[in-house]
Image 1 (cartoon, rainbow, N blue to C red):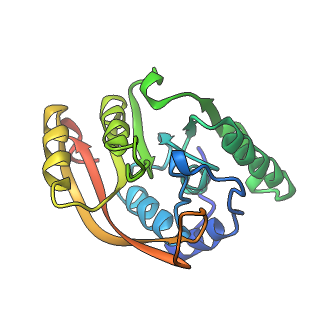
Image 2: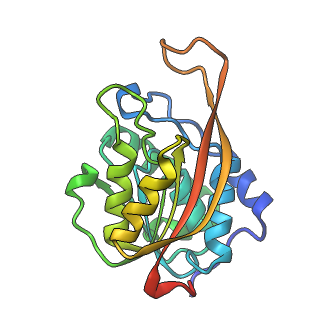
Image 3: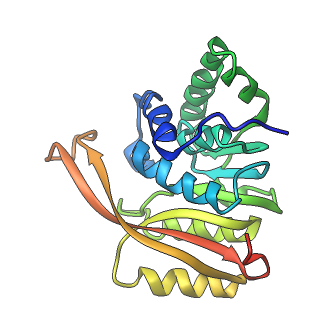
Length: 224
């Protein structure tokens, strides 16, 4: 049996805050790192629902792997990190290798798999849980990108923990797509996602983006 390495949500958040930010984010990929408090909030929900411990978890658009790392801390049996940006994945690999300096955390290394692929071309199926912070689709040419990620998640997993930029039509889109693929919305919550000044187009020190955190569960798996 795998070991749980954090005992509470605050401890999880503190561990996630220790992960250094990826220094070369790409604007066209909307690489906004998930804040530690939001990542911990999402993952603690999944853990309390029984959707992380001893489960196979996929982190779609994982970036440097904050949600993946948190899933491992909470006892995921296997985590598959998926991203199109190999440089970002390599950065995440280097962070994980440094865990060998810590006796308990070193055991996490063999439980993580990295895959460089466009999410459309991902072929895995039948995993337990997807956790993700997909591109919000706010860059011209990226419209609807988060729905592409969501559709793939609905095709490969039984449980989905995801965040999306709020819009008036968002709920209808999520509801329609989920229902078509046999899922229901088990939980929703409005949050605010802080984005620091990180691209030349940014004019404020921090942007607070209204988002919605969704938990989607396959109808045949309502009990979690």
